[in-house]
Length: 599
Image (tube, rainbow, N blue to C red; front, side):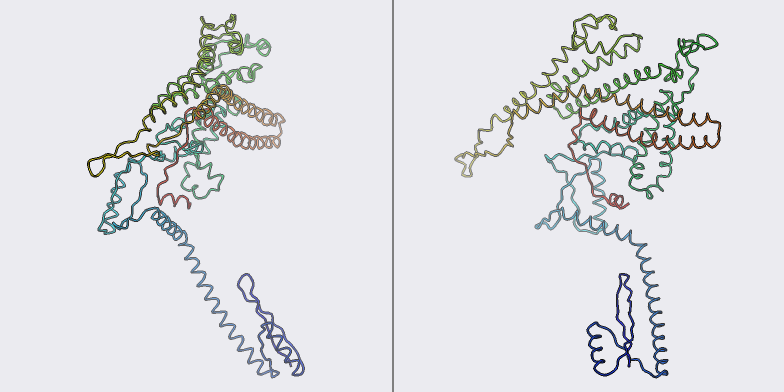
């Protein structure tokens, strides 16, 4: 005798696997043991007859059942696939609908229920220009819902600081995000983004000045701009950041073309785009051009650096001097802009102490030293003097009364230096001492009458009672030591920062020099070297290496490096002169924002 048995097993794909086995036995005792074992392991038992006719009949029945089950499974799988396809088409819409409903209920939970009037009451912020629009929307919602009670929109007076909201578009939003990454502006504080739109790409271009590289960068951003609708849904995280700042990169590229024309560099190669060079050889043979030098034979080159400077022995000293002095001029100008903006902040908020005891001494200190250095640079450029400005600035502090000798640039320079040095010395205690004492005086005057309690008239009309309220009137403690230490730290930070920040702008010179030298190395040591072998294969390899080096190093790494340095100059050297950045951003309820987050 034998019995056909099987055991079911379910795998991870929800398919039933069956182990089929046949057991041969002899005797009833063996049969009973086998049955107990099968019951213990949950095996199904099927008797198997010895009659071949019945075996054929059983096989036919089983095959029929299998075909029926297979047809049922196929129909079920087809129905499942159609259902999944339908769900796939509708899933995004359902997901967005659920998020919208969830956001609506989340907003409704912020409202408070007025039990007596059976209505919801909520307080929130809205831009002033949107009042009429909000009222119209509420009226339209009342009409569409056939509500018997209309929505009431009323402006409330509050002492809370409102959120900050700047209206931006796709061109200005990236710049505003750069500023907000440092800190969101306090309500009605001067927004650095207005100036950063121009100064950020310009300072980047000072470090990235090459109109060949600028054109490559500009063409890449044009591709992003013209295909922005299609690319906005197909980019990864890193490319999405680049795509979001496409208009900033476009401005950076345009300014790079401009500064590249000033530097007269096209992949480190100079061109005579605006006329012939002002310098020429002393004779027709040009034998002495590398030893004695060139002479000026015509008018000054009209725009940018004369092409003859490139490749000469004095190229590096000349460009170093030019770019270093230009960096100082740009840095002093931008720091002065930051201090001027602090004046407008103080004037708008009615803070006269910051005007008289912060803005004025800061302007005097910065311009007495580095404003004077900028003046010397401009005078030296205009007069062609050979004065050593390092010597002038050092001995302005060490020996202010000594004769300047050959380093004198204009009449009365020594007297002016003494006056400026004295003004700088006076500006330091001017920033440090008056403001803490005046704040203490204002605090004492503001709380002088708070020890007296008002008399309250009683209900009987015949007597008065004294009401003492020690915790009223918004009394705030004033710690003079904390205020003085804070002012001391602020003064030391500005005095030392005036020096360090000015030196920090020299990164404009350093990055520009590095970019120029790297470009020159790739051109001369790769492209020209491959060209000199007069071999097509070596030339092709040289061109490929030059392209990959230019794109990988100069157009990617150098772009990122110059971007980060320009970012630091704006955050640290410019914005810390006036920008508090202690506000919070206006975050309205909007279905559009939910859709953007989903994308």
